[in-house]
Every structure is written in structure tokens, then in C-alpha cells.
Amino acid sequence: MLNLRDYQIEAIESIRNAYRTGNRKVMYVLPTGGGKTVVFSEICRLASLKKKKTVIFVHRKELYYQASAAIYNHIDRENLLYVKVAMIQNSKKINVEDAEFVIFDEAHHVSASSYLSVIRRNPNMKILGVTATPSYESARVFDRVIYGPDITTLINRGYLSKFVYLCPKTIVDTAKLAVTKNDFDVGQIQKLLSNKSVYGDLAKIIKEDYPEKTFIVFCSNIQHTKNTLDGIKEMGVKAEMVTGDLDIRVRKESLEKLARREIRCVVACDAISEGVDVPNVDACILMRPTKSRTLYIQQVGRVLRPHPSKQFSYVIDLVGNVMIHGLPDMPPPPLKPPRQKKTESNSNSQKVEICKNCYGCYDSSIHGKLCPHCNYEAPLKPKKKKIFSIKNDEIIEVQRDFVKPELWNPTWDIPGWRYAIKDLDTVEKLNEFAKYKKYKKGWVHKIMESRKRR
Image (tube, rainbow, N blue to C red; front, side, top):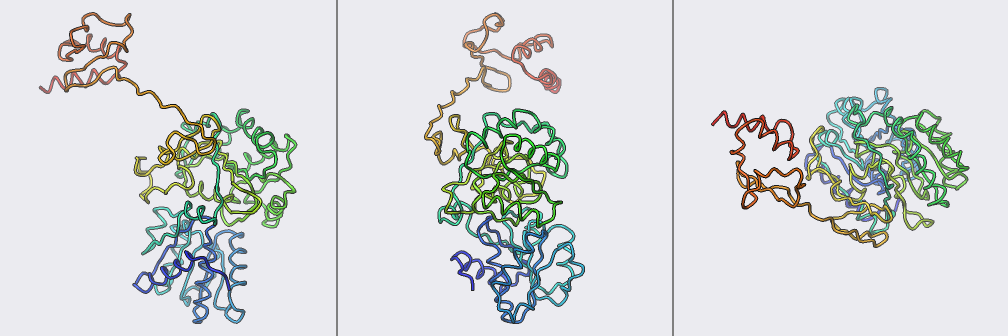
């Protein structure tokens, strides 16, 4: 029998209470490394004691073996026949019509048709989904969402590793990347990250800054992974590649070598973001910019497992994901429909500060300008003086000390430094003023149109 942590016991009781109060579909949210597998294994054990049939669906082979091992080690042999672990890809072959309980691991995928078809096949069975990163689409499938402790709480209690988040001096500019299927186009990412400066940062990190650390490097596609692997090997660093199309035994062997420190790097693409535990890996390097907070948190979560060999985990972000999603331990934004414009209420990026001394990232709403990593205090940014301030819809106050003397029009130099727009009575005068003020072209047109309506 497993030794459950207090919050896992509370989670199980909360889930059971949710079913007792009439909820059929329940989602449980717990950060990566918090022990979701332990929670649903105990629920399966309790169900098996009552001879209730349970089916656990996963979508990766790593998750399949992880869940199978947990169930086998946690449930009495005579009750194992009441629990089945299956791949969601084979769900049509699985008899769920007589199941009383279905569990979806990594339930942020549950809005996909393969999961929904399972739910529809038996309207009487209870559903449990567990995930670290719920999305709006997945959460709305469930009747109730229960949240466990957050990353900060688990770090403070020693269940997750403390981390240092680092960025390079110059973050890769992703503004021009095309977006396909709500994320950056992986082909364009490969081209963007193939320049020498990125690989120069990578070489400095691995060989000079952290020569004793082990790394997982996350890339965008297979070609990008191969190019990165070649670059790392050219540095004389032992590394191997792990991608989703490799046999699971090959992937497992590479990760075991990393755990034994026979190699220093595993370069990965679509293979290690879910269902992989390598607690003693020291750091991850993000070389895949993403709009998906789910992918971001899943990747960072690979290195947040605690281990006696490390005091801190290191997250090295070469692509600026932290400026999109915030630090991993920041509260996630509220679940809202996709394609919503970013605002203060659904973005953490405005709180992130990058230290100019050590390039560590920290939450400025907590630490202000003082870097918690190196104690460097950033100077306060001087407030920009406005060249003008609007007094009403017709009056602008111009502050002369911000005006180049050679550009100043003497006719605008009147007592009080005020100038009435209504006195600019021609298009030519408005154009001259707009050019001086560097207004957009449409400003003159709007002024003229407003005058016509009077």
C-alpha cells in the first residue's frame, strides 16, 4: 500500500464527495511531479475492493507502462482483473459499456474526439480526468474541476525542486513566426533557431557556464533536433536524440544513460514532455518557442522533480517563453476561450523581470527590482516626460524642453505653451503639425471628419 501525502488524501476525498453530490465527470488538477498517478491508483484500489470495473486510458506508451506499474504494485493480485490500462488509440476495441469507472491520464487532451466518444458510449459510468495543465476546452467537458496544491506550495514543502530561471542577453524574436493550429509553425522555428548566435549561447551554457550539469534540450521538430544534436556533439559533449518516432526501448535507454550520467544531454522532440521521470537531471534548455502554456509547463516540469544530488533545477530559456507564459510557479491565467486577446487578467508576462546582471528571471510583483538570485538591484527607469498633454478635445499643452529648437515653429510659441488645434484651420497646417508630432497619417483625416460633423 502506498504512503499517501496529506493533499493526496484530501484529493481522493474531494473527488469522492464530488461523485456523491451528483457530478458524473470530475477533473483533478495537480502540478507535474505532484503524484497524480498515485491519486488515481488509490482510487482504482478502492474501486477494486468493491469489485467495480475500471479502465484507465493513456495516450503514450511511457504513460501506459507508468500506469501499469503503479496499478500492479498498488492493487492486490486477486483484484487486478477489475482494472485495465489501455491506449486511447485502441479505445474502440475496449469494452467500456460495462465499466463503472473510467480514468483519463493527461486529461488536457480530453476534448479530442477519441476521448469524447468513450464518454458517450456509457452515460452511466463515472469519469475522472487528471492533468497538470487544464485548458478551457478540456475543463468544460467536466462537471467539476478540483484543484490540488500549486507549484509554489509543493516547492515550499519539498515535493518539487527549487528552480533558477535564466534567459540569454538577447531573446529570440518570435514576432514574425506564422501561427498554425494555435501555435508557432515548427518549420519556421527551425529556420529561426538555426543562426549561429543561438548555438553560441547553447555552447556557452553547456561547456562553460554549467560544465557539470546534465540537460534535456527541447526542440521544435526532428530536423531541428538533429541539427542541435550535431552542434552539441561538435562541442565534444556526449549527447543522444529522443524523438516520438523512435522505439520506446531506445528512448528509455537514452534516458537511463542520462540518469546514470553516461551522457550529459538528451535532445528531444515530442517525446519527453509527458510521462517521463528523470529526477536527477539538472536542467532543461528550451529551444522551442510555444504559445501553448500546457506544453511549456509540461517541458519545464521534467526537471522540477527533487533529488538529493541537486540543490536547484535550472530552466534555461533561449526563446523567451517566460515572457509569454510567466514563470512556472506563477498562478495560471483563468481558463478562457481560445483566441482571446491578451490582457492583464490573462497574462503573467508583465510580472516577469530579467536581471541585467545574472540574466535570472523572477517575479517583480514579489521582489520588485531586487534580483533574488544575485541581489542585483536594477535602477529605476526614469519616467518619460510627455511632449504634450491633452487639456480637452481641442487643446494640447506642448512641453518645449522636449522639442528640438530647429524644428520649433515660432507661431506655436505662445504664452503658457498651449496651442489650440482649432487654430490649425487648413489641411496643410494640420499635416505640418502631425509631421512634427509624428502622428499617424489618419490623425489629420479624423480631425477633418470631426469638423465636418459639427
